Image (tube, rainbow, N blue to C red; front, side):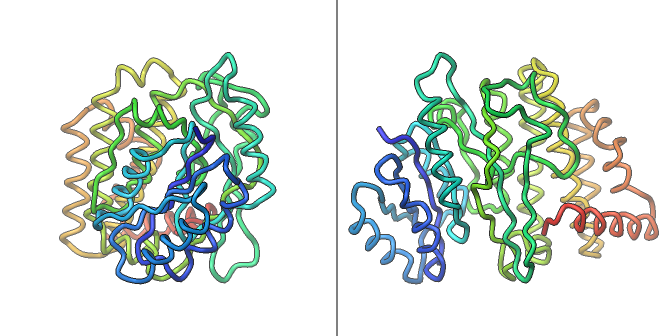
Length: 341
């Protein structure tokens, strides 16, 4: 059995996927790299097969019809043989020194008295055109150099969340929690770092800058104009998160800090949906914004009140054109502070 499985979802990734794979190869036979070719129409499939033939003990190429990023991650979870599991997007990469520390930590924690469910590390925004790189750290939020539970974490502040780039899950936990990401839908990474959380008992934070998150390509899914064009998919993911929070509230409520964190994460996702709908400037999308908040209200009145009358909920629902302008300006300030999109 491998220590760590990487899944690398690839769709027309021929121009950059080899840099990603090269950064993962130093893990040697402790790792497996599952290259999931998601119905690419460029040379992705050929590159995947060539790399798999060069490194048969480490790399497996899996070819499937196009189903989107979530479908590729689902395929990775189903085929992984590693004790632990990590998603690395094909235009991202990892830093070798931090990588070696991650593997050593996983080795040390495997087979101990307490079973590790989630390893968290830092990630770095590699943003186009910027020399300074923002590092997303958790050193003032999570205990270091020890296993901990939800009850032992400190307060997460706005703009600081555990994202897909930060996490390595125990593979069996992902299977046991039954996560299945929607196909042909963007922004499912929000579900990937949300739905497994009530199943997580033991965590470990390693304060190393492991993952390098490339951001700023014009066609990238997190580009603001692209997100507005795909707003229905953002809303669909947002509603799935609302449903999950409501349907599992009794389990989530068993840990106050888990509940607070998941509520905060849902809050920021709903805020992003709302501001993108406002930014689009169309009457149709303003109606969709109203419908999203109505959906939340019908699903759970208490959850609705917590989000609607919190700071972000109030700022996203200011009345009239002037109110919408204030909402947008506030969003711009937050975007500059937290360096997203």
